[in-house]
Amino acid sequence: MRRAVMVFTAFMGALLFALASPAFADGETLRGTLQNQGQPVTGVKITVTSGDGQPVGEATSDAEGKWEVPVPAAGSYQVTLDQATLPTGTVLRLKDRATLTVQVFEGNYRNVLFALASGNADGSGAQPDDGSSASSAFWTRVAQLAFEGLSLGLVIALGALGISLIFGTTGLTNFAHGELLTVGAFAALVLNTTLGLHLLVAAPLAVLISAAFGYGQERFFWGPLRNRKTGLVSMMIISIGVAIFLRYLVLFLFGGENVPYEQYVAQDGIQLGPISTTPKGLIAMGVEIVVLIAVGLALTYTRLGKATRAVSDNPALAASSGINVDRIVRIVWAMGAAVAGLAGIMLGTTQILNFQMGQQVLLLMFAGVTLGGLGTAFGALVGALVVGMFVQISTIWIPPELKTVGALAVLIIVLLVRPQGILGRRERIG
Image (cartoon, rainbow, N blue to C red; front, side):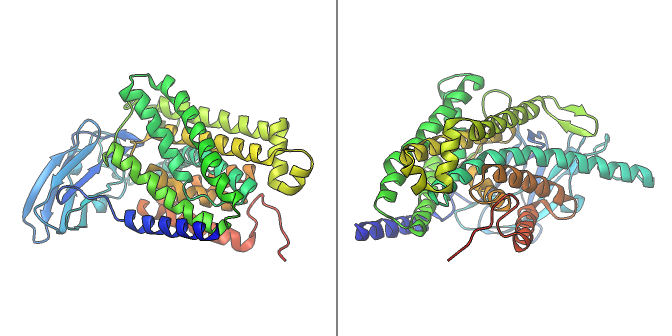
């Protein structure tokens, strides 16, 4: 049996290396998607020149904010966004990054990111000369970023909740949890675009599909591995292979293009004091808050919740007291996958769906879980909100591309002071 586990682990490791290479396009291409607060920005002109300044091509962002310029060969190119074509109220977050130098490799495409934000009414993004007006603009931006951080933190919290519960009941650090967000989002996409169901109907059905998928994983895959006494390190490595397999299975089935839902793609913005948002953003936040409160109350007051906490504290003692540990673990997997699938759907309504959407927030989910305290559901919630807020607000001082690095720096600092996390408990080792 041990040999079989070793063979399987080696197979998953080989699969990891085989699939870890980037997805290739038919030719070398530069592409991107322009968005401001989750809304596509259309009609913006993008120009591409070669390293020696020769024109290569140009494109204009379409109704979904997408643009694409094929390039003749691999090499270094300069991509310029024409700020004069930005719509009123939208500016570059960093005005000196209107031209980016990027490297395109042979047979590959390269995504180019231009960070956009809400600006002055004239669209110039210039700060007023008056000191008090500049201060007011600064605090308005802080309020906007804090709101966006709260929205991101709630999505991270939904995903981190499942990671924490699964770790607490099984000890497994599941690197495939990010793909549960992707599965939920794309299950809703199939029901919405292929079967023609409205998103309000497709979303609950996709959550049920996600729950069934999580239950099936535990029942037919992780449970048998655990019963065969597979080590936690081996299972963690296997989870990395599962994550890559699921990610590239979604790529194979749906392609590498960004895709939206049929409904709620673009909405008129609304102003709440200094904060700009959309109706779907507020509704998504409301749903996330309700679900998090409901899960917290269920863990605290229901028999199932008490049994889950008992299994998390001491599985052997819980089993000796009559609790069916395997049944509780399967329910935890189903619940964790369901809330992760919901997080993916909520993320898909505010952003465009792609096969890497779960991977892009996985590191933030782990940061939230670790910061709040491994194995504690409420710690995951607190840690996720802290991470989400810091990630967004930190873009005031650092480039948006580095905001995840800042979150991880805070994580390291907090763990140096409090290794068990914010709500974690000290444990004796040895």
